[in-house]
Length: 295
Image (cartoon, rainbow, N blue to C red):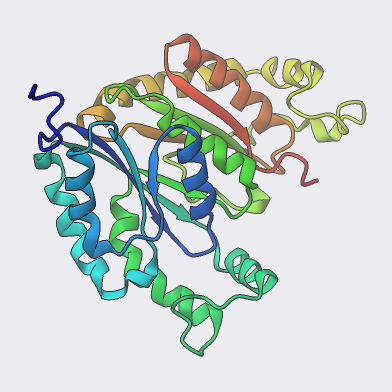
């Protein structure tokens, strides 16, 4: 039998390890991966990770596997870091995705679903969340992609997952440019934060106030201000400078957060302009506007 047809012959494998806080959107992320053609195993005990990888590498038609791990693995999570460290030597290209959200948002989601937190054990939801954050701290610190779902909907989360996994090339940097409003908090998943509040606020122009940074009139006003184009160009150059270093360090995903006061005018216009420049440079870029529509 030809080696390529031998089911016992191991082949290279791409593995997406999806984990994070309960209620932060793991199921949505899993469905997004399935729609992209990944074979997804949901809520698998961490102790079976290496066995699942070995089986997938011996299955000819499976070359992309998504594994969703949650806190119900309990003490087995102490072994996950050791298992992950073994995977590159086993011919596995690993990407770890960690889904995050604020305690307030997670409590609200659990209360609306009327389900207990898996680590609550008769105590408060907050107690369960605290135990879960402690259990997952190591995975959170080493994750390739961290997505904060506090203020985004399921459609935005799907777009973030699609942006991270549509391109199969391991040598390209995938960038998310995310506009936000400082008054709603800085995105916890930002690798760089650009502050556009040095520009005059279109909010104080009554003709521009009801519009957004997606409107050509607002964009022209924002980008026509002194320093605006230089500001965008400087962040384009910053991303260009760090790209090779990120790739050498195994980091293939970067989030550039652009903020203004409310996330409606300046940050949106700057984010769109930066996205256009980065795409012209050949990067894979997704542009999202976290707080647009909140005012």
